[in-house]
Amino acid sequence: MMAHVAKYKKERVEELAKLMEQYPAVGLINMEHLPASQLQKMRGQLREKLLIVMSKKNLIKLALAKSKKGEMKELEKYFEGMPCLIFTRDSPFRVAVTLKRSKSTAAAKPGQTAPRDLTIQAGPTPFSPGPVLGELGQMGIKAGVEKGKIVIKQDKLVARKGEKITKQTAAILQKFGIEPMEIGLNLVAFYENGLIYNSEVLDIDDKKTQEQLRKAASWAFNLAMEAGYPAKETISMLIGKAYRQAEAVQSAAKPDKE
Image 1 (cartoon, rainbow, N blue to C red):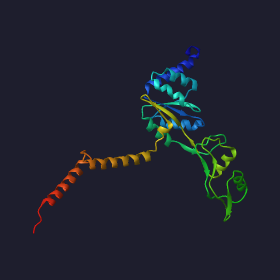
Image 2 (cartoon, helix red, strand yellow; image 1 turned 180 degrees about the vertical axis):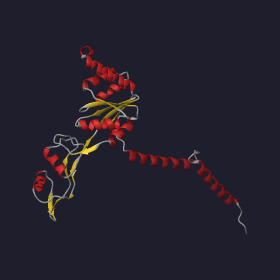
Image 3 (cartoon, rainbow, N blue to C red; image 1 turned 60 degrees about the vertical axis):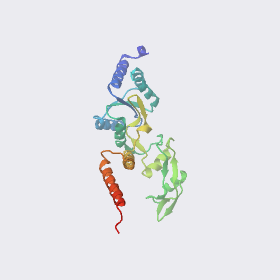
């Protein structure tokens, strides 16, 4: 198979395969619609955390096929748009959080895919009556005029998640200052220690997770106290509890004085 590949392509495949062996975690990102200037900026910001390597899709596939880490070949199933490899010695979940925080919002362009359901919310607007009222009507958005300003009468879904955004929809979203698109490195999947994590698994809300950990710690502490389980965190309170219970027993055992 490789005999029919040009020499420079063979060298590129060997380079990628070598990197796959050197790094414990290998990720796949989709760089479609990412401006070159944004890529260069992010490369500079993330240089210490990860290595971003661009290559043609078929060369990445060949490198994955050569990998000695069998499960890594499964990354090919997650190819989207313009695939690119990232290599890191950090935790995939920590990298996912870093990439998420480095993203910025942008206005939607015609032809792009809606990342979520896009809705024009009911309520007042800063627009005076005029052509905008007609544009809203063409989109099926119920609107009226109150105190000299256009008011949206009820919520209107203008694009469902996964749908292509039309020129008309993009214009309306821009008028309302809605920037649904995210500019950044879109993490698709990550390989580490024989496991592949998809984007849904990697998409962790760190604030929500911290709150869940706090609740879990509280529940664990309460359970340990109820079970009388001695640990560094519970021993002092268990001793205090035992002392109070002993005092109560002693008090109850004393005969009443006449």
